[in-house]
Length: 231
Image (cartoon, rainbow, N blue to C red; front, side, top):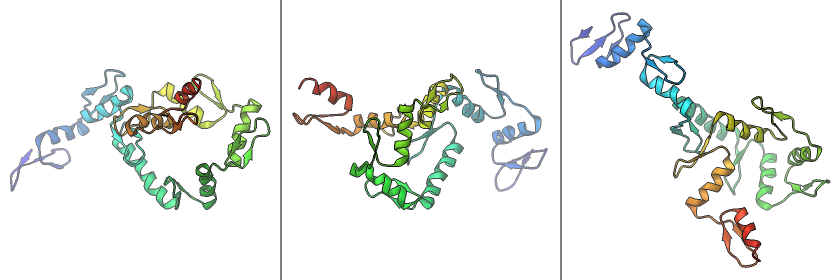
């Protein structure tokens, strides 16, 4: 039904809701008729609206259009991005102690002090087995699992086990195809944050690994090791 007045409006005969254009009314009316004309070719799931279908199809393709401007993480759905960004806002209130070196924030002063040791290269917790040192006790405890052969984190897909939860999470992305860490410069995405950081050196030109013998610098640690074999 169309009404007259200052401007055209299209009224739904079922619920009386007004729309400024006819296509919006037609789209709305599918909520009353139950019509779901948009079908996914991958799994046969159907939707009332084309944009709902497109959002769904990204789950199959792995396409992540919505990127967080703060941490570069990407999302399939805009609402997932907005929910994620709320975490950044909340974090600024819950983590008031910021590191002057890198800007990372912490909820308590103790956590900040432990983190600051990573910048100062202070590692007061050595492993009695191999001598490797850590900047916090929890890091040492986690490392000692390697010597004990303890691998408590198991993948439900393939049964592979890991000593650390984050290693399991990285592995599980091989099954899901999730690549949440995207480069803000070129859009290339990665399973692990470390891989993103290494990749970004291509854009920044950063070469943090220097040969003590000749002063030549390298983008990657492996490249430095290869070079040092020459000396």
